[in-house]
Length: 482
Image (cartoon, rainbow, N blue to C red):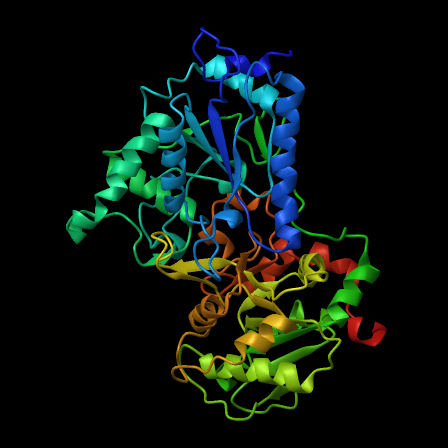
């Protein structure tokens, strides 16, 4: 079908050398590993276009990588969707034939032939209708990651499957956001403080309790490629760099890493017991950093640390200092976790292997933001899911003193990263909350690396259900093998 995409979102009156009717934005991240993922998606879109559409008939679409749009040093522009509305609106003002904006993840795969078939099937009217399309997810119960709101009623999109916005919706939304500052606080659904789940917060803003635009689920927008549904988007599982059979390579990466567990004497007998019965014995280099020494575990007390009920900034900075001064230089990665973090050692090793060739600082985990939706704040890695950094990042971040001993350590590191121009990188496989806090359909295709908290769950069962099979090949005698 050489003229395949002439049908895409267009009128029957085809003009020679028409501009493409869609613009793609890929939520890319800096660094060689992430930029390669995004460029793979970008190149695939453009190669398919060249294959199907002669250049004299229609020009290729714009494919924008968000990390090239960064407006703040150390910030990753556009991981929340709101700042991208302005980008899409500007594109549509400049080109009147643009009918759609697509927001894709760095590992979203697009099938243009199937997209064309879906357009013919649904007969969308992008200029007349406010359309918000995606793969629909719903919470099964109220959850902390969504501020305990709209349990089970709000449909929100899976960002790795892609989101599609019609021209009418983009232009209306852009106008609304421009006037946002003039509205009373009581009328705002805009996430102006903490940003946790950008896709959910965007859907909630659009939905407006049922008075706005609801997400329309499209079966062809998929998490996993399926011939049954003729998927025009799917998620590539290329966010890890070692296969499960590459145990020797995993052991090598783990040998170059230190896992530091933040704990206190109050939790030695319960939380640390879970760690020792699950993932702990598979880690060759692990420090249990506490307020009290216990030789049976063993725990350690670092100099100048003060135990606090919350925040733990002082303890985390002490861990950075310990890593930089006491660990051998060949130890490349520091991973800081809580004592109630449950994780897969094998999957963590596979994830870390993606960053061994990075020349610059790496700060990685589940990314949250403070005032990131309006571009005025900063991003940070949530502590419970695990904070990963390489030696270059640790050296820079260790130079930022804590405002107080109990300042939130993850937010402090995020503010410091912004000042220093260190990008805060997101992994869609590390989770700040428990499995029940996320839709099952969301977790099914993610291959999680970590979860957090023991509250109202059996953490040993969580490990068995999600991680034990992945870790089994590493064995329990990892320390002796190394």
